[in-house]
Length: 70
Image (cartoon, rainbow, N blue to C red; front, side, top):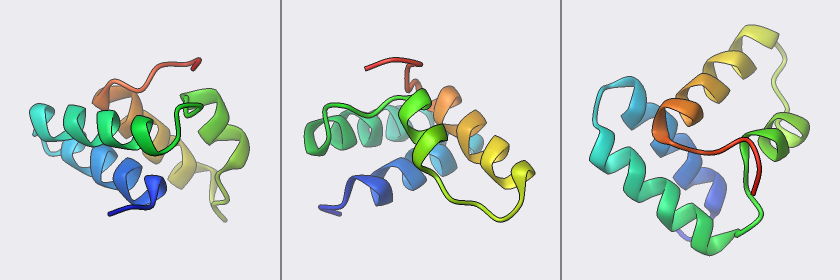
């Protein structure tokens, strides 16, 4: 995907499934598409109707290796 958010969703999903190498690769590709991504940026920008969904997404990104700052 050429849309960085798709890569982040894949990274979070792969990380939750224990597919660490795939998650890491998706984070690397997302960082090429958007060098400013971080957990803090995603937390501020993400729109989820339920707070637990946002937490689940951010935890997946953290497991995938996305840092707090860019």
